[in-house]
Amino acid sequence: MAMATVQIPQGWLSLSDDGQAPLIAAPWIGALVTLGSRAARWSRSSSEQLIIVVSVPSRDFAATLIGCGWMMAAPPPPILSLAEAMTSLTCGTQVRVVTEGSVLTDEFRGIDHDRNRLRLTSEWLLDKVRAVAPVEPCGFRKQPLPVPGAINRMVGFDEQWAARLCRPAGDLALIGVLKWLNDDITAYLGFRGEREAIAQILWPESQKAATWSTKLYAARKVDAAPPADSDLRAVVLDGAAAALALRAIETSVVFVVLDRSAADPAPAEIMVEYRNTRGADVSLKNAFRWQPPDGIEALAFTVPS
Image (cartoon, rainbow, N blue to C red):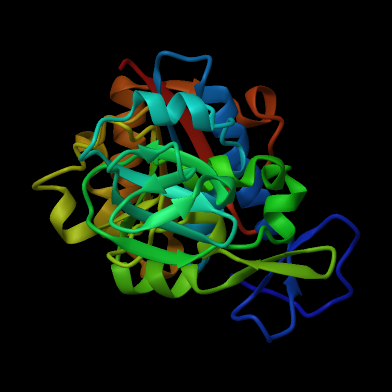
């Protein structure tokens, strides 16, 4: 999609390919982020599956921006106080721990009350521990404590930063060509002249990350084996191959990104046929107070869950 190097209007979101390149503004950047956020809020009060189809001149960044919007609308995580968390854990439980300088996953081995220490495979002064929560088994991982950037501060996530790092939402998946998605995730989203890595908004799952939220799946594998994670609430299907898996996805919200540059009419025809046979139209203008910017087309509909 076209981007222009212009004076960035106050309050606009912008994009950069990396941490050094100039931030570039275009109306579709903020529009796609807003769409993701408003769909997230709308979905909390509906029992039907919501499907939003977005047709763009080029798929570049569209899925990740929608995903960023979804993540930016995440409610505060349910997390116990340190005292409650410690007493609820049993030895041998895999935990994620946020300290004053790092995030790590490890095995919980108890509390040494006399020495005021949290016992993992190593020991940590309790005064330096900011949050603890159980996590699925993943072995030992450790990374430096991320600093909240412009986007996380804009939406107020810095106020509960340790809790959000310790128990991120984990309810979003992106499905498409993994190389394209991973390339998009290396970009930066900007606000008021500052920028933050998209990876620090989506928190993509990886084998080295000590905290993660968004799951990535290859489109070619999904039709045969759709994601079965019960925590998922939203999926973004990026591109024609991913769009063909629509009927197999059961999450509360499904976004479909159709790339018009691919010149394949089949996915769009499938979307329209699915809407006509099962769907009830939803007005994005009335229900979401959202209208697509120039160059983008969108339709939304619900289907029975």
